[in-house]
Image (cartoon, rainbow, N blue to C red; front, side, top):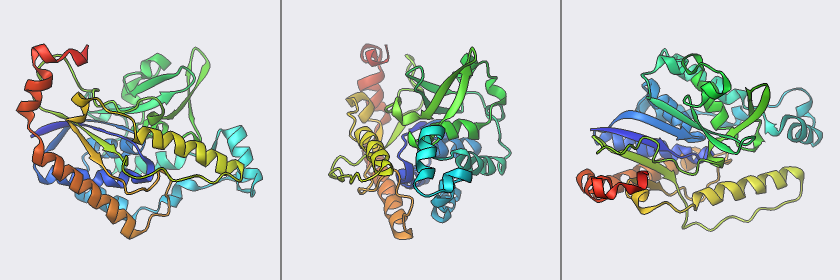
Length: 310
């Protein structure tokens, strides 16, 4: 069965999404249109390019996440480098390594730009904090006088993954005015409605949320500028994990427990990665055991009950 999918971000916790994807594909689901925020944008981009669960698991099981934390030049200087990056570069680490990583994987499938994919196959969510608005890429690129067909997908993913304070933001320009583009999770919440229309759907849209409401928030120790930045970041990310989802959206959402890991746990061991993978797989299997597309359509997408789309 065909399915649209929206993947929420969550940094390193995104490994759990691979487990959920594995369960979905083993149950015969095929990806039609996909969208993602932050780490979810990496997963969405790779699925749109043709990667499947076996390939994704191999990539993320062996990936050295520390490769995304490279510093250059003055930023390598202890203490001063962190201050310089935060104040001047607006983030502790460059985000170009994320773009390079995604670009190399996409090129293996012969994909580089949005124009290389079928129309509406992929949407990447980012946040324009200069305008205070959510960006849906490639749809919103013409507002910046950019041709969506020629825009690199990896660059859009880089924008969506630019966790504030942690990764340096990307800049787009509108009428020569710079707009700061950062992690899509900052403003988008959970856009599981992205592929909805007022017509009766032919196939479902599933949302995948990295959710740990049952795990207490870990206290943050603040003893430095880095510690302050990390505490601010974790407060923001934890707030998203606990964001309430409306019933009409929750019924088609796979809620994945992430075992208390944070978005910036870059030192995850093989056993911890396996724990996240297993959690995602089990959550998706539990969801599918209860899912009934016809009941969903009758309850929420019939003519008299689709007012939540207005």
